[in-house]
Image 1 (cartoon, rainbow, N blue to C red):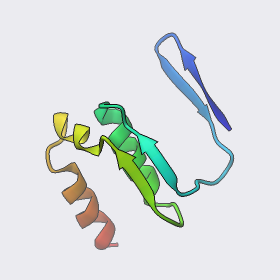
Image 2 (tube, rainbow, N blue to C red):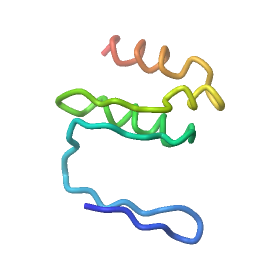
Image 3 (cartoon, helix red, strand yellow):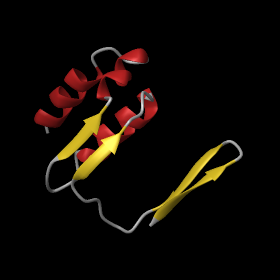
Length: 72
C-alpha cells in the first residue's frame, strides 16, 4: 500500500485491510473525518490527533458518527 500526490489531490493504494494506529490529521478536517470513518472497520484502537479539526466543516461530526455506528 501507499499514497501518491496528484495535481488535484492524492491516490491511495490499499493493502486490503486496515490496522490499528495513529493518524495525524494535521489540522485538516477532511483527514480527520476520513480517518474516523475508516476507523470503524479497524479491529483495534485508532487515535486521531487533531481530530477537533472536523468541527470546521461539520460541528458534531463525531457525535453523529457515534450515533450512526451504535444504531447498527
